[in-house]
Amino acid sequence: MQSVVMATEPVLKVAALCGSLREASFHRGLLHAAMEICKDSIKGMEIEYVDITSLPFMNEDLEVNGIYPPAVEAFRKKIEEADCYLFASPEYNYSVTGPLKNAIDWASRPPNVWADKAAAIVSAGGNFGGGRSHYHLRQIGIFIDLHFINKPELFVYAFESPPKFDSNGVLTDEETKSRLRAVLLALQAFALRFKRKC
Ligand SMILES: Cc1cc2nc3c(=O)[nH]c(=O)nc-3n(C[C@H](O)[C@H](O)[C@H](O)COP(=O)(O)O)c2cc1C
Image 1 (tube, rainbow, N blue to C red):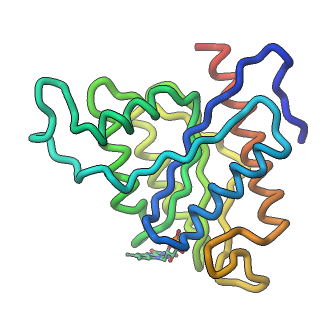
Image 2: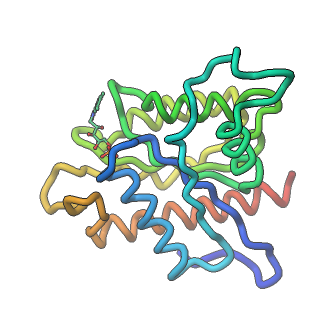
Image 3: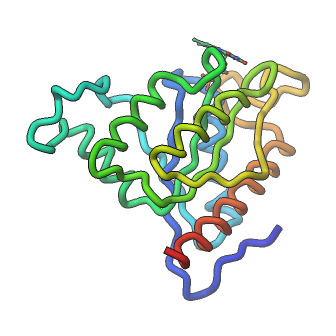
């Protein structure tokens, strides 16, 4: 699939969020690979990694007169400024991880800064490749007005041979990189269509 951006189109800003806090996380590896792929071979789109590790646990008592703690305000600003989102969503007990849900919840507080944006999900893991987290994330998206691309879906079977990541969580598998690129192109096409209609 070719990149669909036209010469005059502004650069599409993607905020990339990782649901794992682990140092050698496969999911962070997927996002770093996506950033590299985008820089090297996709015109008109740039991906910024948005760190969620410093966010406090959601607690409405931390909201004072509509003002949130500084780390939350900074995070919400990044989410608001992005045109669309790339979630790397590990599967924990058949669902999304606590840290990712916490970040989503903070940015959903009034005004909900996720609303009317496009998004894509990627995951890696055993068994179903983290796939069950996608369907819970899509359900969360209904209430916060996020609009996910339906296809292609990317579930990376991280524990099957051949290895997909090195011991630092760096994505090394070329086939997975090419499937990841297809997700990025689909996100770009959908986000541009969406922006033109909003
Ligand atoms: C608390 C917890 C629950 C998990 N639950 C599941 C699960 O339900 N299904 C699954 O396939 N893997 C499960 N896993 C495995 C993770 O999805 C897997 O380790 C994945 O690589 C984590 O992502 P990361 O490498 O980015 O940290 C679980 C791991 C943890 C820590």
